[in-house]
Image 1 (tube, helix red, strand yellow):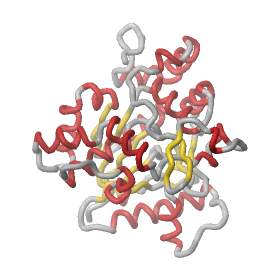
Image 2 (cartoon, one colour):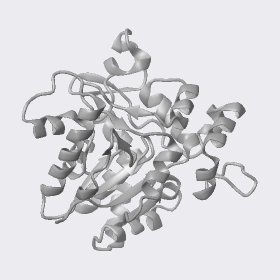
Image 3 (cartoon, one colour):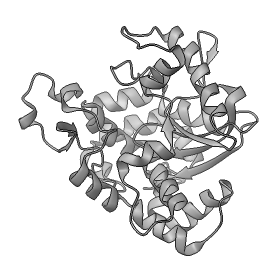
Image 4 (cartoon, one colour):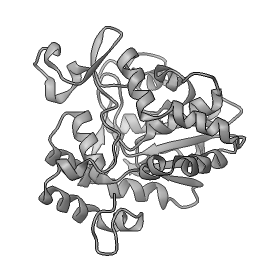
Length: 307
């Protein structure tokens, strides 16, 4: 039975970028796939409506962590059975056990693409996206209890620390996994996305690949968000940094369906942390994640950040 191929990543690491590339490669049209059509190509395991579909009725009160875990197994099984072909699904969950229940259903899993990004840059994007200070984001990235969700739109997703998350996927026993670094996608896009095309066993067509790279670029995606809004952007009314404030005063927003949402595509730059994090903050990130950063080329032989 074909199963789920996971697009797994810590939040703000390039998952949406990879989804956009896949959608544009599959469609192979003369114009970019609209960003709000991406869920039609790669759904996620976080939206609450999938759990309501399994239950058969609306979820009107918060699920407990155990209830979420039990339902998640059924949602993953449903994904695996929806098609005779492989189903690609986005997840931010680490591979772990909560209440003795796996966060990723092994029986539904066919393989994974794991997308990683320098945690120094992740901290910046994480802070902006979730409405917190850089110090708070750095603390979250270092916490083995870190989790997301439990909102009106998303169920609980277990992240753990950045290092824990990376290891859980890349070192998972028996898992067929293809690793992509955000930095390689930016600096060597042809080679990076060519590797993805081969892993997905899609036809290898250079012109088609280069067009998909262009149509999924940060410039293209950010432009679409400015003109159309983005369904996956956080509504300003839910954003921690702006609760209680008039939405008209919220900076960096794009409207979607008449509602202000925090801009999803913020910068996309490499090494933005160099201008925004203090030396002490950089040291904290490196100290928290030194071993994994070294293993994946984010620190040089002297222990200094590479990107």
